[in-house]
Image 1 (spheres, one colour):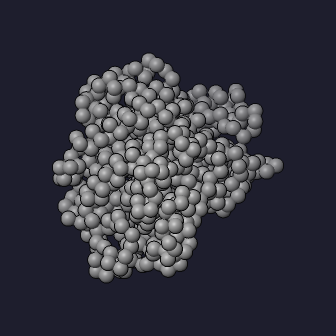
Image 2: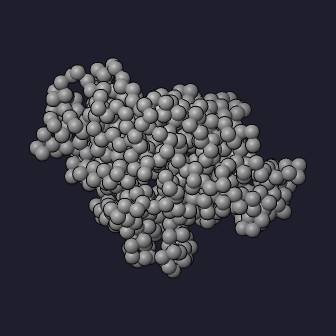
Image 3: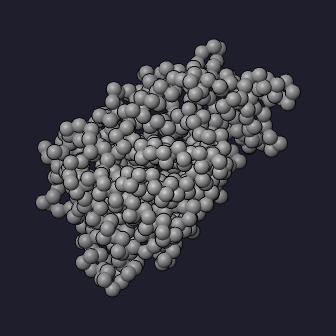
Length: 604
């Protein structure tokens, strides 16, 4: 199925823009709303217009997805760790030193503005469909209403993750609500949880209707999964006006939020509408634009072929226009250098998630080949141009969708919630096993891990923390997880300590060789590498070099100096406590236009 995005009738007609304290968004059209929202095809275009706001240049496409979620205990922006580079506009978006005048963001068309543009489009659709759509008697129109409620919840969820307390706009713009202050996020969370509960009644399960045969459309499975995710955020830690803490609202008590997460995830699992295949299959399908519902992918932000910088930012790097792509891009963000070594050697996720190579700049007959990167330049390998069915010819955009939620997340959210409520029960163990058992084919190892995790409630939680890193590295979920668990300071400090031990090959990394040894397979482009596993030795590597024609590369050391330098380690975060700097400020341009109502200070 080919991805598509249509501009809405009302949005095209809305030539004038209303500039408010927190957004630039279309005003209501002069077109007759009753004529639009009473006809399915016309109302559907209004829903598609919300998708447009995801794909615009400085929205999710080029600002939010590349920058929110990097610099965790398993991900970082690959370049610019040196002291002089740390406070550049791009790097400061990830290293917890973001300023209100950030040059990447302080414009009136950046992600913050485009999020509110999408919210306005959703508000118009919600109001119009409820008034004119006859949802009681037209289930397809009800589906559209559920989609509008859910897409609005997606945007608000991400607004809160990035900015904390934000203006709460749940009705279309008018002269009376032009300027709005920040609203306590708890109020918004409760609205979103209620909206999604309502949307569950409207939306079809995947493949229940022709509308939900694609992962680019909201289904009941996604509504429930998003409600579970938002509940976990609402019941967890976040930076508040008076410190880093959980909500004190009794309606958002952790046990209530965990119950919501459990109920919603178990419903999805029991329905059996989405099935996990192999780990690789999920990402192969994503790269091939396979948006058929019913597999692991639950919902994706749809990008047309000429939009979206997903591989550009999170994919494996190609340095030249080669046999696989017309775009020399990829590898902006990557895994921390120790992540590969922390996986079990049998874990199939390891070599898919972490790639020590990039594709060469030098071409032979138009073809590049894999070449070893440097230890600070590991790429994520979940997204690869070479897995695509089409060549990417845009300068920056690759058109691959952003996978917003998949079934592995549902299983791990369910396991986490059950453990929090009841301890490591058989049900929690079984859900954890769905993820670990797929990743590690060695049944003895899987049983040993599960036995270890199920020893206590705390041990199981630590297992969730570890497995969510191994499963979702490179998918921009980790930062929000560390924040909601309240362990971001602990895990980020631990990351620096682990990087230091890795640089010096100490502790758990003491059994790694100083060099890597490699040669090319018969195809002339695929690397065969020795030296990446614990227990590999330089002695054996030299034997491979002498007897089998392997080449060697200094991996940890060059001219006696560590390749993983202190500057790299220090640049991961540049503040004392990431928790106290875990939100982006509202950009100065919106503060200046806020009529004194919108402030940098968080809400009470």
